[in-house]
Length: 57
Image (tube, rainbow, N blue to C red; front, side, top):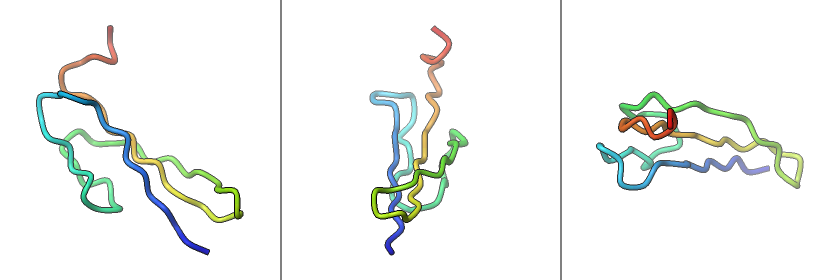
C-alpha cells in the first residue's frame, strides 16, 4: 500500500509555503491530518495556515 501526502496552502500569502516534502516543514506550523484512502491505506493532509490572518475574518 502506498502512502500519499497532500498539501493545502493559502494562495497569495505573506510567505511562500514549503510544500516540497512529505513533512510539515513550514514556517506557518501546518497541521497534519490522517486520511483513510479508498484502498484502506492511510494518507496525510498537511494544512498550512496563512500568515496574513485570513482565517480570522
